[in-house]
Amino acid sequence: MNKTKQMLVFVLAMGLITSFLLVGVSLLTRERILANQQAALQSAILQANDIAFTAGEVNEIFNDRIEVIELEEEGSDTPLVFFRHPASGNISFQFEGGGVWGPIIGVITLEDDFKTIVEITILEQEETPGLGGIITERAYLNNYVGAHLSESITISHDSVPGDPNYVDAITGGTRTSERFETILRTAYQRRADVWRTFAEEE
Amino acid sequence: MKLIRLRYKKWYNISRDGLTTNNPIAIAVLGICSALAVTNRVDNAIAMGLAVVFVVTMSSLTVSLIRNFIPSRVRMVTYMVIISSFVIMVQLFLEAFFPLIAAALGAFLGLIITNCIVMGRAEAFAVKNPLRYTFFDGIANGLGYTYVLVIVAVVRELLAFGTILDVRIMPDTWTNWVAMALAPGGFFVLGLLIWALRELTNNFETVSE
Image (tube, rainbow over all chains, first blue to last red; front, side):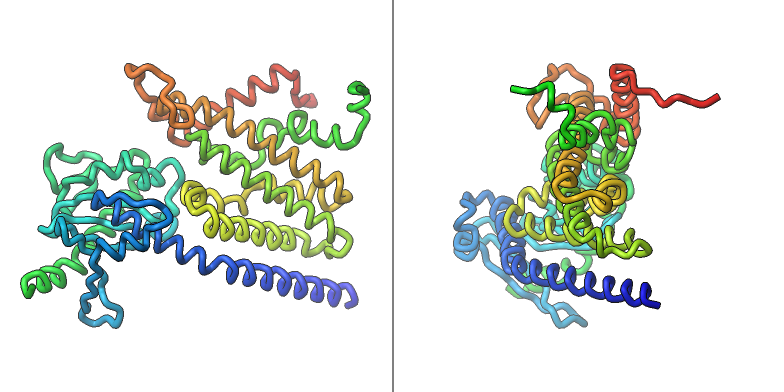
């Protein structure tokens, strides 16, 4: 009985101490992490639009050069957010969805036809390092430049060269490629009509 | 200098154990899951190695510090909680102050929790030994893991991408060995390396007849 009691006290104490420590570290770092995430999103959009910036003034340049457009989505309280570069008409938005091991979050920039891909940047992913993880690499993401984002964009190992509806899949990352295809298709479906309606009204 | 006397010092023997005689990957074959996964790029191997050095040292020190209070029936759970806490702290710290490194490491960081070396050192060494020896044990095992990882990664990155640390080494006519970037390539290189190391150091397990 005494031993059991001792064990319980130890487990409780350990749980409490580690919880407090983790909550503390999390509170201390939370603000910076959120700021870093926002800066990552903003610099990805600036980069896609070929706007020069330095790490210190990302926020300032972003607010100056990029227009934030919030559009209501049917059946949802949170609006869909689009980022437009008025000079070129490029439209960017953040997309997210389930990868193989965790969420994949990224930014895509389209030309003003809301179809041709200018650039994709991955902000967050937990794919298999070295295999599906290649999805973050610029050399791979360059395959998407010029391709057409649509409900039927296909990421496949036997892609058709020159056909803008096909993009090469990752060798050794077949499941990541499949998930990414779904993520892009869903992101497009959710936003295409909302954006087109807005663009026509304008 | 009394260099010759070094080998009678306990901290020297503990360090040598972790680095060579009982190298966690090459001899004990622990933690090879992550060793296979992250060694297709040298920069990943280095970052992963340093993170493991920190986690294995800190968690071993903590276990050693409270070793007299840990009830033996829940000691495994205790190690898990301590290791996970350190891994999460490293992760948050890097995300807050070094977002670029954190992004490059991605999933590797969280995977340190499942690295058998960390748990292995807690159970095999830290729980029975005082702080100062545990410190050397943790560092030595972490570094022992790191340098094997880097060697494997150098071979794999060179053959799979023709580069080392993203610097082009091979001539442009070099054909990349895609197999080396995949897990089987890791097995080949690691297997050959362990064979070579054991052959060179004459370190064989004797099979009883």
